[in-house]
Image (tube, rainbow, N blue to C red):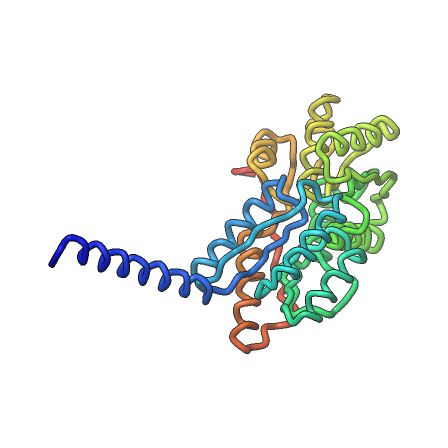
Length: 305
């Protein structure tokens, strides 16, 4: 075969491979996964779970979220952008339960199935909801702190951000159990950490200063938990104020082992991310996944405790 002919054959073969590859890629479903933020370890783990599901079910994962959980206007922009791109499905952790209703309605109107994960929405217009049972997680935290305090003492609640349904549910569950089951325990202060470690530390220090006899504290999310631990260390109150936190990170696990934190209520963000994608895959296959999937939280104590 002449060199020129061989060259043309090679070019044709390469073109055929490229066209075939492009066709295969275009057949792959695209699922947008939009967390509340990308700046905390919880969301890193949720991303890993989503990617695992993407590999298992051969779907492309488009991961994008705001830098901070308080920037829900940016999250709205991201959802609307994914709708404009005509993705095949959207998994959304709503940063604000009311503000994200409109964007989700727009996605559904365009025929794009939406699964809400981690944090709820003031609507039922979605395919599925995947989250830890956060009310029960808050109740678990209340029982744990009450046991540490032998059923008596003043406590503080370091909350997350207004409008975040997941942490609001935890705070509700905590208040519910303390009020109904532990008459010797009184919630004397509550402040928001605003999803920021430094602001959470400042809020915790304010409550500790205002209530020098404080016996315990519950922090309802990862950044609040980190801030509370820093406040106890900074004011030399480790061991004197019992601290129960929610969520886990490398630093929180270290604080637990060092006795700064007395107990952590933890969830499984990898599984949450995985299940969020799986429900959308099921919907795209024509199946109807469960409307709600509740996952359990567990209490972790220091090794040997």
